Image (tube, protein in one colour):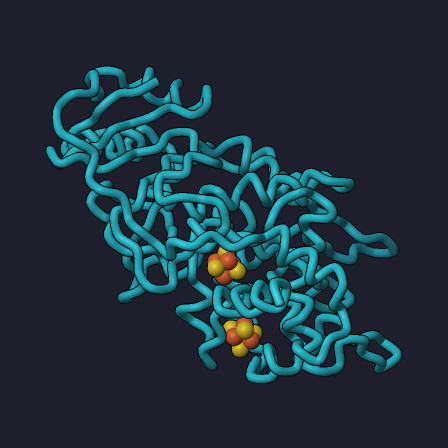
Length: 337
Ligand code: SF4
Ligand code: SF4
């Protein structure tokens, strides 16, 4: 399905969804920072800036309650959170590097254990992607096999037009159904040309070659050089659209409390700290090695996919300037030597 929508009609579509009590989530400025958040009105949408954190939190929040417990007499009353009550949601303005991350996460959250918290939100969400017409020096989606108009993960993909509106392409039944429900707002394509797409880092990595080097170099002095600056802050994992480690914690007293799921990061010293006191990743280079191994070897071994969409967030936000694209380039060079 290919349609067109004017900028005014796109606003009208979002406002109609909001007015019909559909939860609409999109990039929105909050105290100066653009984040994917619920929109109270269509004009809150910010489309000229990549949100600081990724879209994964629409499905996998930073922190969420799993259950509440309360001791009553000799027994314990347990109240489960019911994912069936999560609302229908439309996610809008999702950049291709974020949308493409969602099917990558599907693999792990629907693997041996079916995570209903993730999967229920996923089933109830329609994703409206937006092709990129601008990239910065940190963007490298094209180097990991994606593109500024990659449709992976999007139910609808919008491409900005010279006329000010958008070309709208349907990539799933959900997306097409959304257009049909508001058919009067769409027209046939023809008014305006697609704006030129962004041009991120032009040279693709040879991910197979990089993986082959990782397969054979778990122990290698190069890791000290590559990772010695990492301070283990975890920022890279928290802003990443595909990092998905979490911890489950009981909080409260012996009388009452909650069980909660929190984001975690393999860059943290405590991540692998055993109750015995032993830590198999006792030094930061081992923890950074795990980050690279997980993204470009382990996930590929298990699910046949790379755990990086080249969004560049970790490059922009690392406090000590570690550039994962640079690290991949170094590894590729070693693989070629
Ligand atoms: S953001 Fe940088 S310093 Fe922090 S854990 Fe990641 S690589 Fe290490
Ligand atoms: S590893 Fe960095 S560049 Fe790759 S998807 Fe995660 S945050 Fe984006």
